[in-house]
Length: 210
Ligand code: DX5
Ligand code: ZN
Image (cartoon, rainbow, N blue to C red):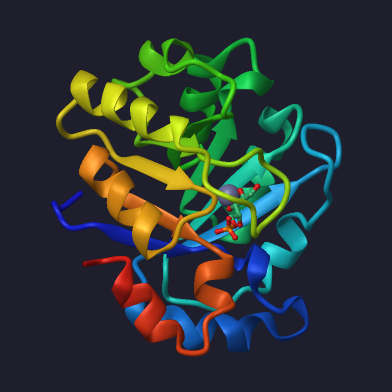
């Protein structure tokens, strides 16, 4: 990726009843769309699956964040639904390299995510193979939570391991925490409530770039 900071609004905080209108309101200022898929097993919340993703109308790349058990079962469905990147949790598979290969063979980029309590060492061996590492800066499951500062040290550690790795951070991102994450080495900021809850979404998104 280029060396600017990419902004990926999370539709978890959009109005699902007017999803495509909400997406249209941020499309021109955003770099990708973050799509949170939850199964009420890996996380204590349930959102939606591939049939809803298929209904999303956007020119932005769809980055699907699978907070589900057995993510390998969903690869083909999400490819068919239009996903560009398939992000799974390292805690959910015993064979992350096999899953990365499966995702790439399906024609998607592969991302790996780690929970706040999961050490960076769990993903170190995957850095050469994935397109993105997503550091969770809240406990996954809900929007609108407070940023957990320990994420900054994880981002620094990942950046020290690779100068050109895509490092995304997800949870509690606003202008202040976003700036801290970029200083630590993140280059993708995922933000839900800060963007969709803003009076002016364009201003909110641009505040994450400065
Ligand atoms: C949380 C999700 C996040 C969520 C972030 O489990 O993975 O993508 O939408 O929401 P905010 O930005 O409100 O913390
Ligand atoms: Zn997410």
